[in-house]
Length: 158
Image (cartoon, rainbow, N blue to C red; front, side):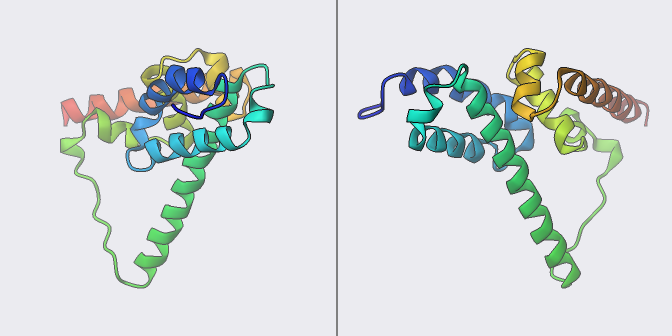
């Protein structure tokens, strides 16, 4: 990256792909949220580079951006549906696959699962990125795994 400040390129190369994979379960908007987080890091590099863990800051900003964007899209979809311009069809439970099951998790659970299993981040990094305690991150993962087990078991037996 030409013109990037010292250390930024290493942070980008070390975290971008991993964080994008970790948040990919959100589908649309995940990569844009990661890009936005790195843009914010670059703009604020004099501050971010002085932090103990600049990568944790980028992960936190990406997660917050993703969740904010998701809330905005959800509100827009709900408003459009109320106006009668959109129809929402129920998911076909017989065709549920892993991606569908993950999309059925709450946003917090999806972030936790994505960062932990998609990105390979340790529990502490997941908790920091989500702005919650390690115990809360573990709880989100526990509930998510149980919901996925139930959804995927029902799919096989249904």
